[in-house]
Length: 254
Image (cartoon, rainbow, N blue to C red; front, side, top):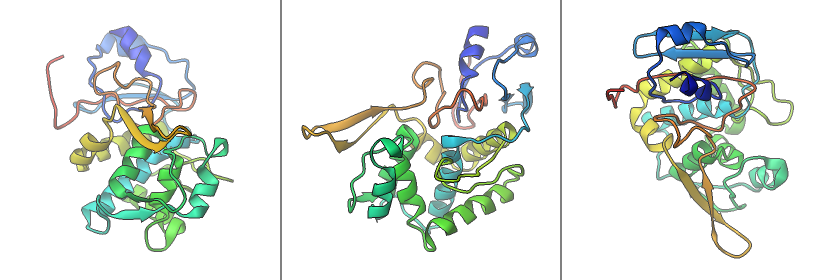
């Protein structure tokens, strides 16, 4: 089991079902500069290292972005079937090599909120992320303000968000391992239906190759499919480490 713990110390996963013995948790040492392991089924911190140190979360920011989108849907201010046009500015900034992870959207393409969420959370698409964030009244600035408002409301107290994806130009987004664990827990507890729907995708098909074939991308979380209930957006092993949780809607014996 200790080998499993070493494996999961790679990234933040929204849901992970693992049996970690107290003796292993107390003796395990992480080489990562920042680490936090929590069994939220009993509210026990199993291991932590610099859990309150400010860090740049990069694409982990998309967990907060998704939380805001889920909340807007819950309020009836956005619908899964709502269609959003991809603006030329979003396409220009986030296509090609300079755009990082992509869903392969095209300028002018009309895409549902549901598919944009899949593109953001399965393959970490920056184009999908900005298409979603820019679509609300007030645009991107209003969305970032919502991110920080929601963070305060759920007591993600040591975080500040300046973009929906965590690595745009001059990005000053900062958070902590402890805040990310809290945010992940709140996502699972408040939006279990969306957690099941969007954080457990094995692959995603969107866009077309030069030969006209649909582009198939696998979930960018390297733990996905290898460890039960390990899921979530793209992982950044050198920056942040995970959460361990028993999901509230699906319990089983280990």
